[in-house]
Length: 161
Image (cartoon, rainbow, N blue to C red):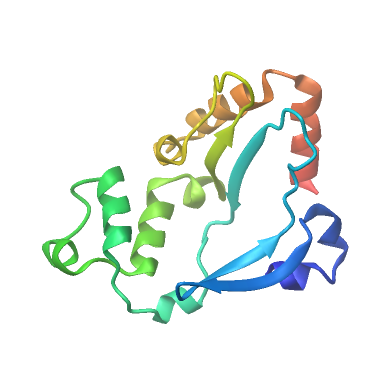
């Protein structure tokens, strides 16, 4: 998707894309570090959309124990006996994540927040997995924006574009 965006008017909203790199049979995108020159960046990782996995994941039947462990960390009772023995597919994990987050209900989810200095208000990936309601997301956004109404209004305007 990032490759396709490079040829559109949305390019100005994306980091520079430098291609793909495979490490230990896993593919990674190589892109610009947009935070490099910033002194005190406020960073929020948001996944947009109700469905946050690619079509290729639907047919991938490889079972993974690492994804099972991530699932168990969020909900120890979610995995079936068979899944606990053999692991889960990425599709199963992604559907679980969407169900447990605001992806389905709000059309996006917060995956992490990093604030500079003392880290007050920083939200780890593990903590972000606990955001299930609109109210929790609103509280996280307010904390991230530190109640700066101008910034809040600007972000809302961009999201509505």
